[in-house]
Structure formats: C-alpha cells, structure tokens
Image (cartoon, rainbow, N blue to C red; front, side):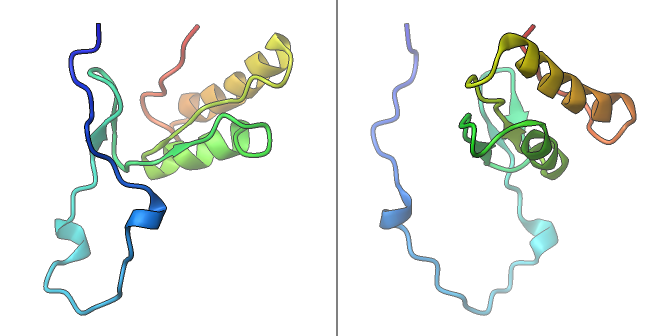
Length: 103
C-alpha cells in the first residue's frame, strides 16, 4: 500500500524561471532528493527509459552528475545486460560510485 500520495505537483508549464541577481551562492544550494526510501540522488533528475533517450552513455552521464538513468527495454535482454555492464565498468574504474542496479 502506498504510504504517501503526492496531492500537488508541477510541470514545466507551471513554472517560469526568471534570471535575477541572488545572494545565494551556488555552493550553498542543496539539490539532493530521495527517489525511494533507500535511493538518494544528488540532483533531482532521472532520464527517461526510452530508446531514443537512455542507453549506457546517458546512464553514465546522469550518474556522473548525481542523477539516474533508466536503461530502456526496447532491446533484447542480452543487449540490456550489455548496456548495464558498460555502466558498471565505469563504476569499477572509480568514475561512478555506488551504482544502483536491479539484477
């Protein structure tokens, strides 16, 4: 059962960012968020699991910036495994720390 249901949300059409001078320093901004109870992200971005959006290259780029990339399912299981293995190889070389995968 879902413990918490979000009652209000915004889309890109609901928000307009107007550039202005600010006294807030970039180093003082914290964008961390929880994707799930056990998964935290350093930036609140998740790339779409679409074949035109996320394969290993995008998943690696998202991870490097603190987000998460979801490998799409419009390929064979073996091809998915290879894409995930490419991402994991970056983890093993120290480029990405603590990758989250579902085996």
